[in-house]
Length: 134
Image 1 (cartoon, rainbow, N blue to C red):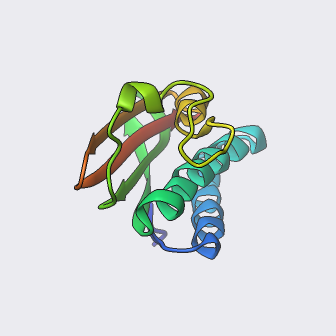
Image 2 (cartoon, one colour):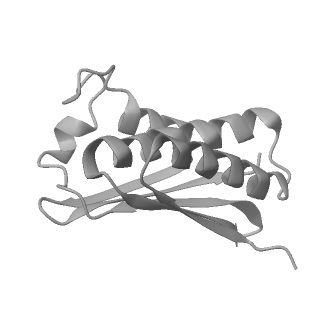
Image 3 (cartoon, rainbow, N blue to C red):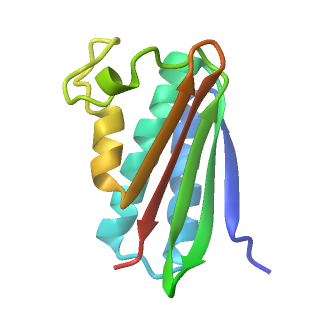
């Protein structure tokens, strides 16, 4: 029987690719369109990139879900890294501590249908997001 979830340890750039590929294959089974699959892959790339850049290691979980007659994917990105001192600032477009475009977390929030982030300095960060099949 096919699994309804995947878990990928994120340590390097190669793991980012693996997480994207496994999530796309999983989501494809629920009938996501190719453009929706690209959105899911982009969100996972951003979340996994943050893990590699800031926390050095973490995990991306992707699970097929059904709620109130809707089908979708649940993505959870977790790490035990340094945490984010100012979530409000981190969620603003253009803010970056790594000289990037600063579109990561705000971009993921825009791409997904739901988005939650919890972070504690010195303990890590968890991002939970959902995308529903349209």
